[in-house]
Image (cartoon, rainbow, N blue to C red; front, side, top):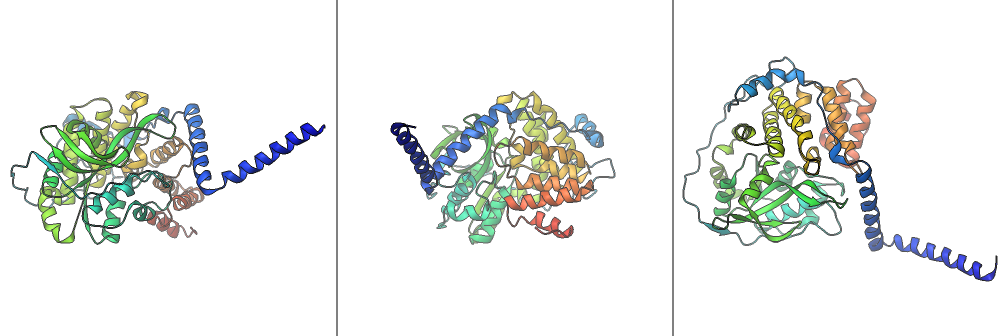
Length: 436
């Protein structure tokens, strides 16, 4: 080897060592690692498009009587399963209703000042939930930020989703403020709370560019702090898009439908009575789920395509919350029948990242194989780390019921890996006499 080639080889080796060293410098590593992950996800997406993964229930005959009853005519009465496998009460308890708020005219335009905007970007990813909760709390003078909320509601930085109940728990346990979480909201609910001086955190389904570079459906929180009837828009603090982002009324309704019109209101403790009055009948949680099921029922036959899919799914979610697992499973079966007919680019393939009603329903009527296959399908459609603690937990529950104890233990342990301290998984491991 001549001197020139030797120098070139030495130069290449030294450059490689230098680049390798630079890669592990924290700011460089963070950016480079993210770029590499994005590239690997794009390759995985092209080789195995997640929207093509379709779950097909195989045990729906167990809930066939429920489907027939729904098709015969939907009412506001919760459906009860005709099979002995149903768990939960035989009759849904009658709620104690709070009087509906007086129909006082609302201002045509309201914009609440005092919400401190935060975006979800920065050194932590998937910080939509922490950023939005922080914004909602800032209105009441809370001094924290998304980096204070984040480690509590998502101990794993790569957790794909923070559930609404986790946000509610954070408010109750860590802020000194109150919070109420409900479903079945509508545009008047938003206007009524905003006019009374309460920003509202909502969960929407939106189409954004994801890490693969593809525009696809995902769940997204927003803080709604104003409305303008003349313009037909809400004023939102959107942690992904920007501050004071206008959302047309019809767009809000469509995006909100994907999450059963879920909303969270935060408030100082001394204002709790006023908040309950503003909720009216929905102050009672049982009545709220019954009302939401009725809303979904009324929407089912007036909608088509993806909107009808969401309506069936919403009915299932509310019936599952009412422990009518047979009726819920029937509704989810109908939603899964519609899913393959949705154009591939529009399919909400991340749905089970955010909502776990089908798991409760299938488990409740002992459809353990459907529960297993649904969890498998959800995890298989994920690119990168499959860190979704709920899916591992429910797959573990299916495996326990099917006698696959060791596999179940491994699933519960994986659930805890992605969500340290996840109580349902800890409880199951204790029952099985296993270490976490």
